[in-house]
Length: 231
Ligand SMILES: [Zn+2]
Ligand SMILES: [Zn+2]
Image (cartoon, rainbow, N blue to C red; front, side):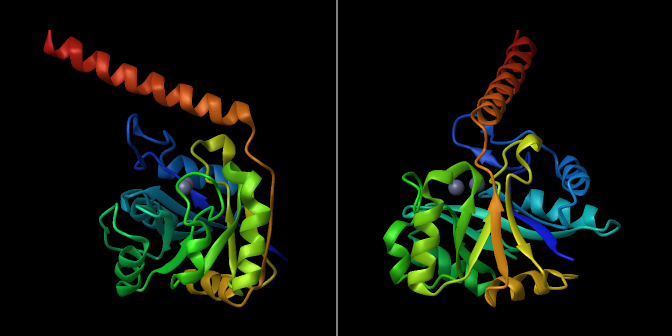
C-alpha cells in the first residue's frame, strides 16, 4: 500500500497582497476533495497564516485523513514552508531569521519551489539550515527538475505538493510513500529518511486562470457590498 500526500495546499485563510484572499477553498472543502481523491495526508500551507491549518487539524480529528499544519512564509529571500509551525512568524524577515524562528517552535523547514524565478530561495539554499527542499510544485513545474538536482547536490530530502489555490488543483502534485503513515511524525520521518517519491502534473493554465477570476470576482463582490453599505 502506498500513501498519497499533497504537502502544499492553500485555503481561504491564505492572504494575497492585492486580492485579500489567495484561495476560496475552505478547510472543510479541502478535506472533502482530498478524501475523494484518496489523498491520505495534506499540508495546509497558507501564505503567512496558520489559521486555516489549525481549523483543518480540528476537522481532521474525526476523519481518516492526516493534516500536517503548515505555513508558507514570505521572507525577503523567498518562500519557506514551515511544517508543524504552531505560532505565527512575521513576514519579510531574512531567510536566516525566519528559519531560526520556525525552528525555535520545532517546525520542519522546507524551501518552497526553491529554483522558481519568483519568490524563491534559489542557490542561497546552500547556506541555510533547511530540513528539505520542495522538489515538486505543480504551479512551478518548470523549475522542478533544477530544484530536485539542487536537493541531490545538497543531500537534502524532498517534498512535493500541488500548491493548490483551488479545489480543482488538489493532487496535481504528490509526495508518495510506501511507509506506514499514521501520524504527522510518521510523515516527517518518511521525508527525512528519503522514503518518498514525487509525482504529479503541472497545474493547467485554465485552473490558474479560473482561480484568479474567481478570486477577483469575490473581491469585487465584497467591495461592492461595502460601497452599497456606505451609501
Ligand atoms: Zn510560494
Ligand atoms: Zn504556495
